[in-house]
Image (cartoon, rainbow, N blue to C red; front, side, top):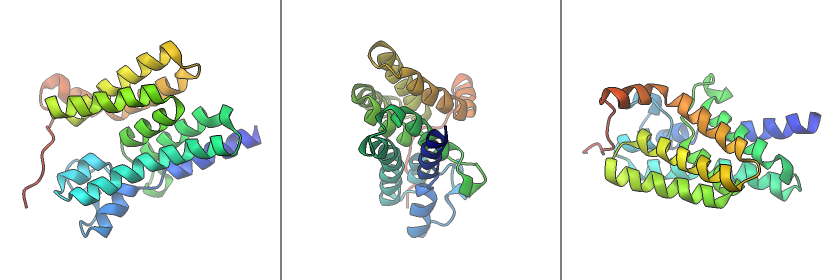
Length: 194
């Protein structure tokens, strides 16, 4: 029990690192929570018009999910990898450093899912990219990606319920976006012109 709790805590703390906030500050953008949607994820950093800061946020957010799961595998704790991955996504969504007000977990989730069951991660990333290019609505792209990844995992991955839990958490974090999608008022991806 104690070992499980420690692994969960390690995954959570890794996921809690706010790369969006850090990247934005290093790029001279100030507090990213005061820009656009106020989210700390890569999509909101991209709204600032700074592509490099958005890219480093994306890499950082994805990297912490991959690192958390990778460390579980590397340390011989393969059975705990799904739990650690879920903890990392929870950490991104509810980081202790920011008063438990974080992002929506998309980049962290994609990397986590890819590390757990790479076909589902690849399916999610591909779906997100295609939907983003066609529809240019980040939230819709992410939610569609979660559905496809979870569906594939449910068919072929033994611990698919962890992937379903990650998807459910992200759907919850996107509840306001879902309301806007239904109302037809959700914003589209666009760069700020400088």
